[in-house]
Amino acid sequence: MEIIIVKDLVMRFGSFTANDRLTFSVAKGEIFGFLGANGAGKTTTMKVLCGLLKPTSGSVVVAGYDVALHPEKVKRNIGYMSQKFSLNDDLTVTENILVYGTIYGLGRAEIGKRTDAMLERLELTQVRKRLVKTLSLGWKQKLAFSVATLHRPSIVFLDEPTSGVDPVTRRRFWELIYEAAENDITVFVTTHYMDEAEYCDRVSIMNRGQIIALDTPQRLKQAHGVESINELFVRMVR
Amino acid sequence: MIKVRNICKSFGAVRALNDVSFEVRENELFGLIGPDGAGKSTLFHILISLMKPDSGDVALWGLDSVRDYRAIRKIIGYMPGKFSLYEDLTVEENLQFFASVFGVRVEENYRLIEDVYRHIAPFGKRPAGKLSGGMKQKLALSCALIHKPRLLVLDEPTTGVDAVSRKEFWDNLKTVRQAGVTAIVATPYMDEAALCDRIAFINNGHIFSVDTPQNIVKRTTQRIFAVRAANMRTLPALCRSLPGVMAAYSFGDAVHLAMNRHDAEAGEIRQQLICLACEKVEVKTVAPIIEDCFIITVKNQK
Image 1: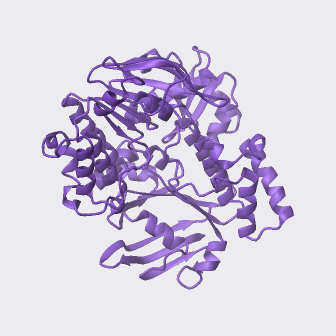
Image 2: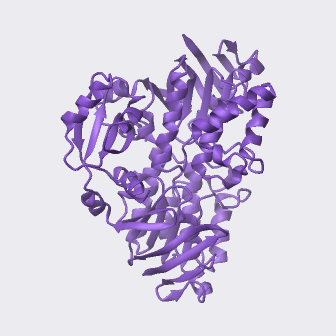
């Protein structure tokens, strides 16, 4: 089943075309890597898919809803972890979870239950009363991801979730992504770490507003005769 | 040349730096490799005289970082981890501003930054805040270099920058080095570590393994196995459950497995995974890369 269907998406800002006739789809439960150079138009696409920007033209259906017609319904069915750390630094871990749970309309009792389960899974129970600003970046990222999936959305959008994180924490983070995918949450992720592209079911490479490659990492490497996605990326985007 | 001797620094109960000592040689490209929270930025702040250590000292070409801070600031170029130029000033205005702060004219040292700056020169009239990530980095590097510092200190210059711009940035660093500048760079990208002359791993405020990337790889005694199977997503956790496994992590399209025992064989690992119901299991030994060495070092420390 396709959970994201994008047809001829065009997004213009004045005379600048950020997304130029994008067409692709993402299957339910898939980990989809959305790669591209800085300024290629990735964040714009992500915002359209999340119902935050109305497309100039084309059709975008996310979780069964047209983003142009029903952006609010789209937002209820997705989770979003932004590039900039989005939790509130001056609240504790549990307070942050409470805020997000309430925004997504979960009851107090349900939030409490999910909070306990989440903190145990993340091994964060010890720090539940600590202010978020006192946590290491790795912990913050794990927490931000879990908060983005607290309401059990059908899709989660991750915008450079591992930027600046060390090799060990980065990989632990990807195990959280695998876990989400196993639980049938579709993962739409951008990254500048090209080894992480290899962990995706499929990847697309975007350049100057257009998708210039889209397939499984394995097939892309074979088709272009390269050893790694990094090699392919540098070759195609340069 | 730079001598860091027995630096300690605490913030309340947190020991950010614990007896840190190392040296950086003249005209070296030195990499400081470590996770978030390891103490990299604190060390940099002490190095460039923005912070005093609790004990220990730093000497830059004989200048003491506490006593001679005025002289030191003139010979240092610093690029902080967070973009810190003036977003409302244009590209050209930022460069002019930094030149004037250091009492130089842009033209004097333009040759040093030419390779970097020519990529952003066409956008000279654009406010710095409107540049793409890669271009912001290039402008920040230009501003840090415009007074021709003896030492360039770069705190995670390529975090959040795409693979192509990252490569360009490192090509630029090589040019800077050829011009005689010594550079210390902190990075979480392990492939960048391999591009440095020498590197130091830093973790929990401790420095260890100061050496060339080649020697660090050579000194690693653990055997590393690359494992592939049908179930790649559950494979890291399954591998960690095997007896004698020190670390198991995804590495591109395989899982890398470091064993505690030195006599472990690919065949037995394969058998054990097949017993755990894994299918299409492939195990082969591979040469470690810097990233394996880092993970092993961090594990050993724990």
